[in-house]
Image 1 (spheres, helix red, strand yellow):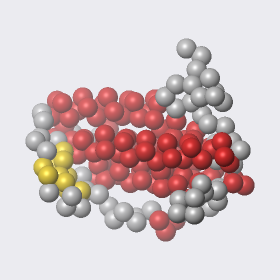
Image 2 (cartoon, one colour):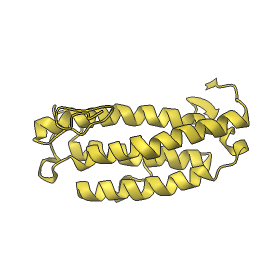
Image 3 (cartoon, rainbow, N blue to C red):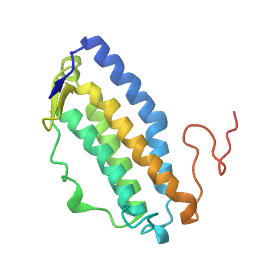
Length: 174
């Protein structure tokens, strides 16, 4: 198991504020826009028989973001299947669940003390990092799956939102 050196509590607090500001202003609305772009009638689309369907991928993206945020706020990651039993049935329900629960966990994260943010948290024996460091891990995980899901949109007959700049469907306006 690898263990990261704990940085100062001031660094942990600044890092949290920087990442949560970015998450609130850009990442969360962008993830929601990608999920919202899935046509309900095409949520079973998958580009390959081995791939997750668009609906499955949307749910994985939504619930894993909330799962990460909850684990950081709790200083302990829950069972990875914690949200699987209550999977929303529609894309709109997934989107609403994501927005509601991500905001709730963000508020909990904002209340962590600097000492709590610097607390080492075990990730199922794979590694142990300060709690705040998982915000970057969560962001990378989400970007990966959001990119997968965005690549499904045009083949499903939808438009791809602008993610980090314009897209063909939503050109950048500078």
